[in-house]
Length: 79
Image (cartoon, rainbow, N blue to C red; front, side):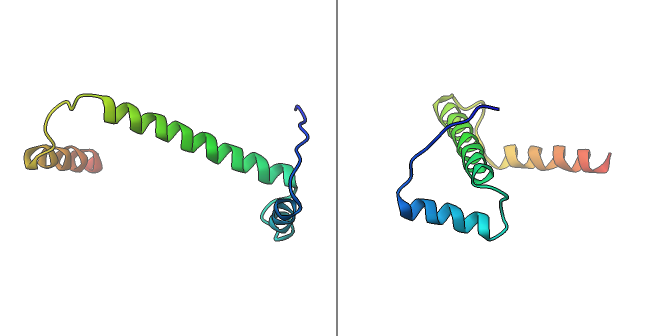
């Protein structure tokens, strides 16, 4: 695993230390890794949302569309 040194203002370092002290994380590195993973997830979701917004709709999302969707879900649930 690689290492990285970061500089934080005292207020942010105190916050990180509080998170570790609360028992939610074992080390400050664990806390920062979790933040980075969450940011990666957020970036992936944003990318997917933007791709969806830019794509042309396949068919209208009207009552018939949702009826068909409910039918498919019901059939899968019965399996």
